[in-house]
Length: 82
Image (cartoon, rainbow, N blue to C red):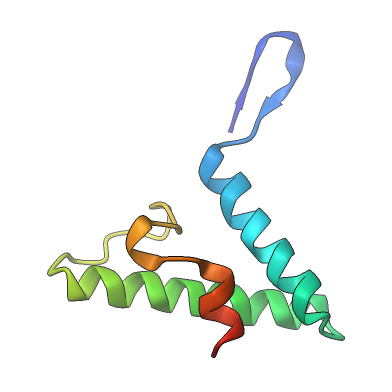
């Protein structure tokens, strides 16, 4: 996270994207417990990312890599269809 001039915080695009996908999925599903839903959502997102990387022959390196990639497709559809 970085600060731009004027003390404003700059939100990285990757964070904005994953939070938007989570928010859309949450609003569509309307679960009772937001925290439990978030845990499930991000766990499945991480599993999907890891399986895609392994399928491509790459090693999973660290959790700070981008959580959304073009290989993963639309995260909302992946999560809702599970």
